[in-house]
Image (tube, rainbow, N blue to C red):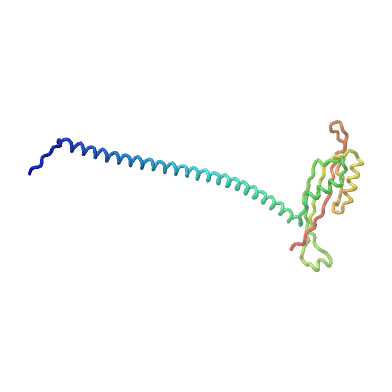
Length: 207
């Protein structure tokens, strides 16, 4: 028995086209979904990278701050090294603040310092007598700090009082008044002076 086809010839072609369009629609939907997911991942990665960059920026700023602090510490270390070399040179550490405090204690109330300078003087002393026989070729090195003090005092009496107190200190030697003359400042008459004195700092003997 022969089968009779009642569908028109164009109908299978239409159904095939519909299947192709449906397949294309699904493919397009999958591609769009994949592209959207990819964009979401990219955006997430960008955000993570931004956080990472911000964190690295903070770490870099902290590192720069630590580097500056390290530079300051190195500069302080160099300064302390220079001071230590001076202390080694003079034989023992001398606290300048202690000297200034001592001067402030013996200064009259209305006296003022305009400047204070110091330099180190060293000389080798050959031991004599029994010390020479005991130490043989050993030499003793003596160090001195030479101070020059520039200031002003209300009157000659105040200056004389200061010199007397300075001379009375056993560790200040060779106290000498370099000059003293009248000075006027804002209508006030005072005495400008300069005083020199020595602090002896003997160091242990060296070979």
